[in-house]
Image (cartoon, rainbow, N blue to C red; front, side, top):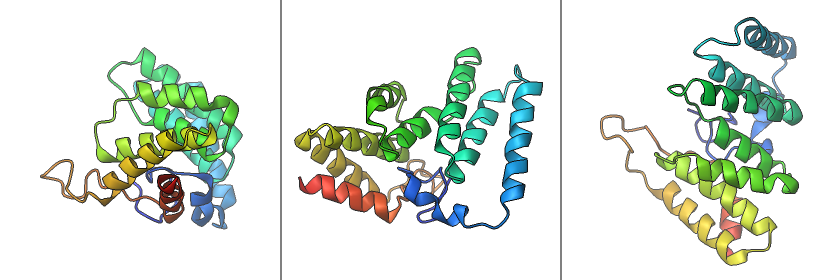
Amino acid sequence: MGKKGDGSIDSPAWGPDDQAPFVQKPDVARREAARELLQRAISDHPDTLMIALVHELLGDAYATDRLYDEAELAYPGALDAYENVPLVHGYAEMKLALLITATRQVSKYDEAQALVEKEEQVFKRDRFDALAVLARIAAERGEREAAAAHARSALEIELNTEPDVPRHPGAGHVRAEEATLAELREFARS
């Protein structure tokens, strides 16, 4: 799981501005080779048990390099695989919803909302990300009270340092980017 400020797509409420640390890496050829390897795994082994994860990783790899259109095309492959292999499930629904709202694709906000509502939010991180998506959507639609309520709830979750799983003290902690927290604070003031 990403840590606060690391810019990884696994960071809660990931957004395009959170990707700067990865974009500046000089090893572009290596990341391209990794994406090609993931694409080859998808084409050569479409029916393997872990294919959903490979699609999700490909989406993450594209998003890391700010190739958002390609990332948006990769995540649905994971969603389709989830349907075909019921015991394998990842985080692609939330990643796609975060991508849609972070890149302000207003025409796809209904899709993002449906993805969030479909996803079971078990851990604080899941609930935080879902509330961030819903706050962005409500704010864009001019629903100030709903945006403020979602943002306040997300900020409350971020402040809660109790572990989701007592035997794993770091599990489930929300490590949101400062830009995301600032965005939510702005919504909460409305």
